[in-house]
Image 1 (tube, rainbow, N blue to C red):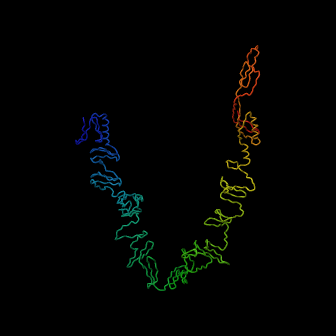
Image 2: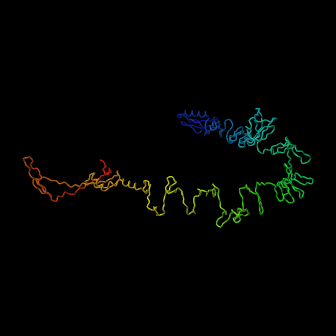
Image 3: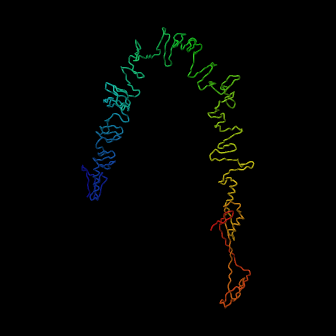
Length: 617
């Protein structure tokens, strides 16, 4: 019988025939009649309902009102016929939910803000007014402690994580107990009202009608008593030390003299002290132990300046030493220096400094020293080279050297190690020692400076290494390769001690006979004791067919021989026995001979000046 499965509202959801199960209509297994093993399906259905279909993905065939525990969010959700919604608590996600309804709360996990929904697509923030991406902004109420551990409620003003300042209601300034901890961007004490933070350039860009004081560029407070009015009578207040400063900000701040004789002018280009009378001199006086003296005198009629000289005779007339820390430029035909000694601190003297210098304008530039004859150091541009031409010898002091481009070339003992080539030199005087690359020549020895290095002689083409006067080459080591030269003794020893190979027919010879033949071929006096001879020996044996003699009662001639038989004494019991009586051979043919060759190896060694067979058994 088919089972008809209805929902709570009475509507049919599925029909399950006998012995069948349905696992696709809804998310639990529907069991037909007579299903084998139905207990397992029933138990699993209970488990699924008990755990609310707990899984990271939603059920495949949900019904409206079905619960699902989303294990990816650890949240219980309910199916409303269109999708699963949170069953309780706010929605937490990094993006706005698409199924929210009025009254839902959503925590934006990306910005850490709480929103509430007034409609399906309308939401409003219900927490802080700034986003994480903006940084803390706005007012923050905080309680801090002063250095006496008293709590102080303050109001911080933030913009984009920058503390602009702190509002305080306390009449007496206080210092935070923990310093700048929690007050990043603020230092110092907190006074009543608004206290500015450390933000550079912090200002209130509004118009203020009154102020107690103004701050100068150094942070000093200036009250009204420190200022001078532009009209009427005004005084300059002094600080507690009795000092004050007058600032006049106009182009002609001072005019002096009964007839406005002099004035001070100021503009963006210059500070001027101006004389309004024609021919009026300018004097700057200082006082020393002698009284007032003229430090600077400006003669306006003659256009002269005197320094500690009140009657200058030239444009600049200085009485005393002159120290010029910068450059000195003299534009004239002649510069005369009348001193016993000239000291120039500068490191560089430029000569022939004209507007467009060339080698032509520089030719002949140098130094001339007067004497009986002029001594000169002059630069010249010769036809094929340029050089400094020096008229006299150069004598270097002891221990000094001649350098080129920072490299020592010559000293009092000889050329320096930096000289690696001298292509123009075609001959040398007698040398005590010479080093060329890795070769060292001293006395009559040529040696290598390179560890284990060779000394090579390399004639060109077919040229040879030739020794003049038939000298001997001595001190040779024993050779190790085919192309090594040898000594006389090594050659003799090698040759005399070398094994002698030969072949020998020893037919009819024993060891003594072989030794005799060997001594004829290689006398032991020519070889070293222990020299060996390896002898390939051959021995021959010749055989012929056998001669067969057959007995007969009467002489029979067979071939080339005759057999004769005689009777033997019959009393002896030996009758009819063959006895050779006479034997004649005429042109006996025995057939083809057989030659048998035996080969062997024998080893002989010179022992006590004798060839001795050591072949062994």
